[in-house]
Image 1 (cartoon, rainbow, N blue to C red):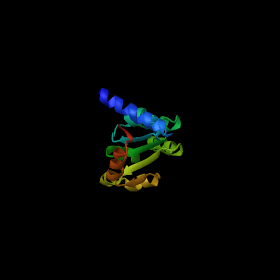
Image 2: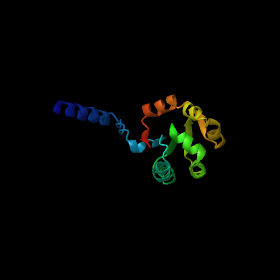
Image 3: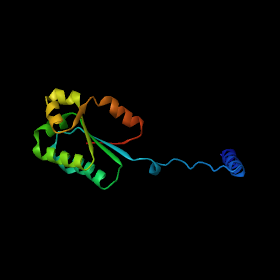
Length: 142
């Protein structure tokens, strides 16, 4: 460890001698913060009291630069049938939350067209979620 510290000091000293400034380390604070919230629960109380409330606050309060709500599984059926949740999701979208839904789930419940009517992007979500995970997005599941 001592040798490693000496090597780092020598490299930094050498860079300073030759007029080069070492690059600051990349920190999470210097990158755009991104949240993907995966909403799978068919429980309306989870939707109203936790998932949607947090996602909207995360965007409005600027806790994250980007907030994506992914409607997946039983939440698709719940959202398609619940007018109060639909109004909440529309409000979230108006605030800048991107809402996407899994087409396989929507089709399995027969609600993909209803979700599209709500202006929700309905598509295969496996590849986009995989990309988010690989890019280091913060992920919450509800």
